[in-house]
Amino acid sequence: MSFYRVKDLPESDRPREKLLKLGAENLTDAEIIAILLRTGTKGKNVIDLAREILLHFGGIKGIAEASIRELSAFKGLGKAKAITLKAAIESGRRAGKEKSKRKINSPEAVADLLENLQNEKVEIFGILTLNSKGELINIHKITKGGSNFAHISPKEVFYPAVKDLATALILFHNHPSGHPEPSKEDIVITRRLVEAGSLLNVEIIDHVIIGKHNFFSFKENDLI
Image (cartoon, rainbow, N blue to C red; front, side, top):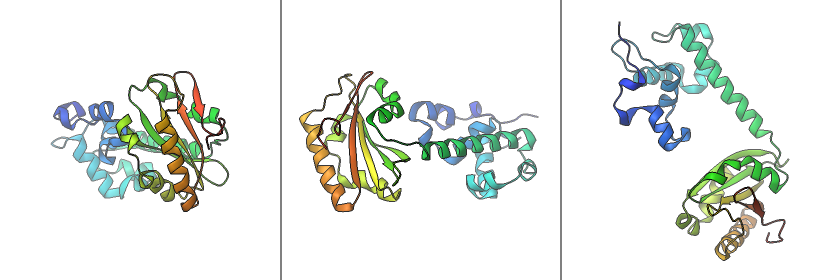
């Protein structure tokens, strides 16, 4: 009996390759499940099997709520794959819970959280959304590339903040050159966003620029 595996799919449809090129956040739920399952069933590739599982259980939330016994009973899953799915979803749940409780109370905490931006070769701009206790709600990467950042609109910044019900946010971006000192453009855009935030009652408490092994805080330098 032969089983369809991820590598049996056309290269453009392989979720692992897509993850490597575009990042995990750009995968569909079915593609994420397919990576975990690794193989399909006789006559059915792993992507189709993942879609059927999601449809049957009502999405990832339904899979999380199902028991090992219920998952194992689905044709094409079995106990080993059911355990893999449950463990992966529980891992994601715990990571989300840990992230939401993380207190962001200094630019050092921001720089530590965004340490991976030090190695980016292009400029990435985003926001950290915070609750009333100063705890992290979410990280949103909004634009990639300096030209996009130059034309950032308040709507792009505050839509995810309002959606997260955030009471405050922190702007961030990296300087691929490694030098975190702000440009005149950085200062102008920051002031424009701070003014927009005051109208929406969402406070921008800092803008942190990530350099190579260092950072620049607008708040610490009295620019906010």
